[in-house]
Image 1 (spheres, rainbow over the protein chains, first blue to last red):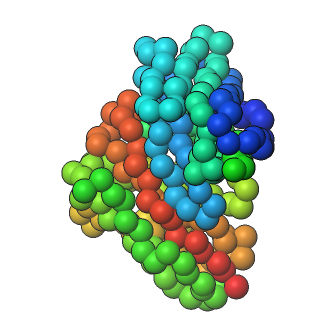
Image 2 (cartoon, rainbow over the protein chains, first blue to last red):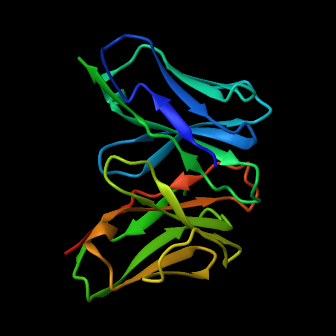
Amino acid sequence: KQEVTQIPAALSVPEGENLVLNCSFTDSAIYNLQWFRQDPGKGLTSLLLIQSSQREQTSGRLNASLDKSSGRSTLYIAASQPGDSATYLCAVSPSDTGFQKLVFGTGTRLLVSP
Amino acid sequence: DTEVTQTPKHLVMGMTNKKSLKCEQHMGHRAMYWYKQKAKKPPELMFVYSYEKLSINESVPSRFSPECPNSSLLNLHLHALQPEDSALYLCASSPRQDPNTEAFFGQGTRLTVV
């Protein structure tokens, strides 16, 4: 059974710092990995999707990498801002089904202080 | 229009009530999903609809009854719920059955069962 873990569980940084969030998964048989952002009590906003054949994706200040063989992904946030404060979730789409059946990680709660 | 719209945003219901959650998207997506998210936990998949047909039921109790009347609309009918069913219910959609496509999530319905 696929299990997804995120480290750290919580992170507090001052504004302007570059930071790295980690995601690990136990089964490398995946179609893709997605990073999401969730504000308190709200839905999920998709940040980046990395196909299993890709190594990284970039969007603005965000860069996500994927090492499928080792079961790891990182989300790099450059020049963090207070507006980046949220919970960040990674999710994998296991390749044992024909559907996008996302398995989510435990999340990293990020607080960026001014 | 790149939105998944869920109504209502909040719902309080008694254990003997019958209520429905609604999810709508107008992006032409043919796969739609219900996820359940308990407090401080990651979302967990409940149901997947593909081309208006139920494709995956993750052993969800029958007090939750999904319905997909057309390609834009997904309902979740609730009956005789328990207090432990209180959670954030998230709807998502993706372009097609292909698992290598991005999922778009709604803002969720916060359900409280009293």
